[in-house]
Image (cartoon, rainbow, N blue to C red):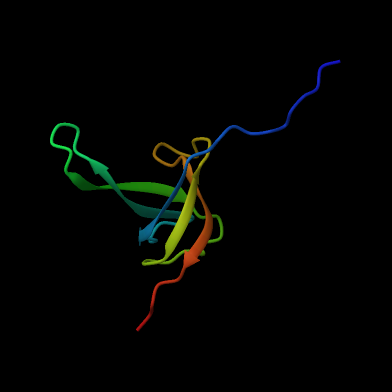
Length: 91
C-alpha cells in the first residue's frame, strides 16, 4: 500500500561568473547578491566564491553559469555546473 516517491529535495541554485578554470574538472564561480545590512538596513553587495564540478571542462573564465548544490565531491566541492548561460566575449 505504500508508494515510494523518487522526488529529490529542493536544491539550491546560484548564478555567477567563472573566475578560474585552471583546475581539471573544477571551476571557481563568483556569486554576487544584494542584501540589507542587519542593523543599518543599507543594501550592500555580498560576494562569495563557490568551487563547482565541471565534468567536461566546458566553462571558461568570464562565462556566466548556473550551478546547483550536490553531494560532497571533495573537501571543498559540493556544487556542480548545470548550464552555461552566456559565454565570455573574447577579443
